[in-house]
Length: 256
Image 1 (tube, one colour):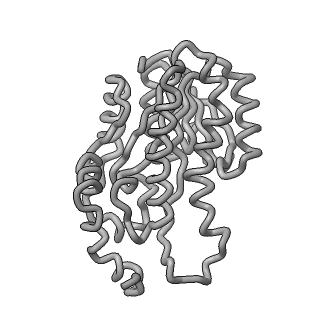
Image 2 (cartoon, helix red, strand yellow):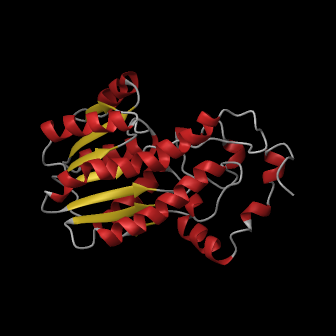
């Protein structure tokens, strides 16, 4: 992937990995668009990243995605990179059946259905470009689930599978498909959930540099930090991490 003079849309670009990627792409003379769920947070991004273009969009809402596409296509018809980064990860005890059903589906709609719908909506525009790239941000938990974040882990595993299929189906088009697999990273995404991140968090700037290097080298899968090890564990002994203190973290109510 060429690293400059692209028009790039990053979902969930108000903080964390999305914000760091936006900053790096701006440095490399790209036109950068980011989405967020609130105008307040997008205003802060415009302050911290002069030159960025912002759009309010909750990707769990299909109508919001349709509106986003209409705005982007009109204002930025040269869009050639879509980075599906937005996501939420909630600590959840599946034994607690008092949790509203809507809460259970929220992560699925945001982390899985949303990116699939984003690809569906933006694919015609991307196919009109000479060269285009879709980057799906998954997680090391796609390979080895964390029991205390069951739905998040499941959605990322599903996105890993979907990304492989998408890559195969778009093989004869101008659109490349890349999977970016973060390990546990030191961002606001993990604040307040330190008990689930016993492993050392990867510095977000180191993560971003490795991600950019992988894109520059045209890798189909980019696995910064500990992600290669997680993939190996997932292949050789996926139950290893699930045997640890997950039951204690969930109040001792894990299934026997």
